[in-house]
Amino acid sequence: MKIAIEGCAHGDLENIYDTLHILEQKNGFKVDLLICCGDFQSSRNEDDLMCMAVPPKFKDICSFYKYYSGEKVAPVLTIFIGGNHEASNYLQELPYGGWVAPNIYYMGYAGVINVAGLRIAGLSGIYKGHDFLKGHYEKAPYSENSKRTVYHVRNLEVFRMKQLSGKIDIFLSHDWPTEVVKFGNIQQLLKRKPFFKEDIEKGELGSKPNNEILYQLKPTYWFSAHLHCKFAALIQHTDNSVTKFLGLDKCLPKRRFLQVLDIPHNKESKIEINYDIEWLTILYLTNHLLSVRNTLTYMPGPGINERYDFTPTEEEKSHVIARFNGNLVVPKTCYLTASVYNPNSSSKKPKQPEPVLNPQTVTFCELLAVDDPITQVCKNEGVELNVSADLNSTISFIDDTLDSANCSINSSQNSTPMKKLSSFNLPDPKLDESDSSEDIESKDIPAEESEDVDPLIKIDDNKAIIVVQSETDKNRNSPTPKKFKRRNEGFYTTDDKDK
Image (cartoon, rainbow, N blue to C red; front, side, top):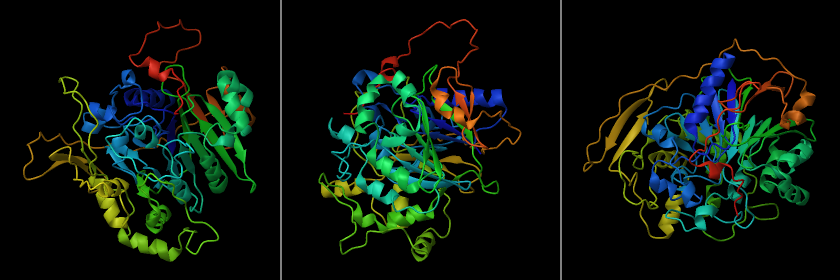
């Protein structure tokens, strides 16, 4: 399976998909899956921008709204985790994951999915020690503080990840595990990012919880973003297994933000998203550990008189799979829960919206018998939530056959009539078996940060990584193109760190 890995997307979906298209044409293959490692910025309208933790002058609507409305359809199945620049109010509607737009899937606060036999796990957000032990207490409208704490990783999700058993093929995080720098070319990293030196010496560059997960789960691949640079490392584990780590840059010309891997998959399985039964069972068994309060919350451990090992038994997994009637395919249903940005209309002054319930989450929670965090927060505050309360009408993208997708409208009795979107079909991912790549020795991995890196870098005996710097890359001998300033250049060229 050809999998494209993207660093920080920063809402630049059109350019990312255009880059993939050019890459496919140039190399003669078809990308089957796109993975984005955070800062996705799924802003549907200007109200969503008010929930994003960026300075006001950088609140750019970008292009996600086109895919949300159905004006455009993602040409490749896309999955992503959250980072620290997100439309947090929208992502909070989907704490356990869900479709944010047709063919674009968010993995939730944390999640594990299966795609054609590949087991993919992801942890959204970034680590900040002062919020790690707290509950998920935030809700829109946010204060300037909660606008940032909402994307801080919590111990509940890390605890749940540590209950996993079996092989993880791919793990996704926004910030890096702290110790990966020890296994790559630190000198080359510091040459590009000299201000990393102090954090590296203190063991504070990245996330300590991610480091614990890395050593416990030992995934085959680990992909991250956040630090706006490209860095590769091979982590050797005590059982002689190896994790191949790759941190990628942000989507800008001449930046190394995208790579394509060829990873073996189950060719008899469709390239579609399935729930992971072990992860579902862990969610079910640990629902009582969910906290939505701004207080310290500790996970159970040895020496207490309650269960602390929630790695599921076969009997427990059988119980959960029965709740789903044996069908673990994620329903391809996406609802509009907020109005869509219209560039041709003069809108009212944007403001942070109130929280709403997403029908995807309502259905999931009912099936699995787990709680929706935002519902519990509102319940504690005496607030009653409505399903899709931002609109009287909900536009759904429904795929009953799992082969095609149609748009329909679900309206309340008092809903305002809305124009029905024309039907469209999602393209089925296809794998071009004719693709072949020339390999380079695996010893060249640490040198991939050099300016003279070959476009193909071998990461093991059978799989090659293809480096894509930009869709505008030219031959080295071609004239230097005229430089232009993009409207939000300052946001992307500032290596900001969440405080």
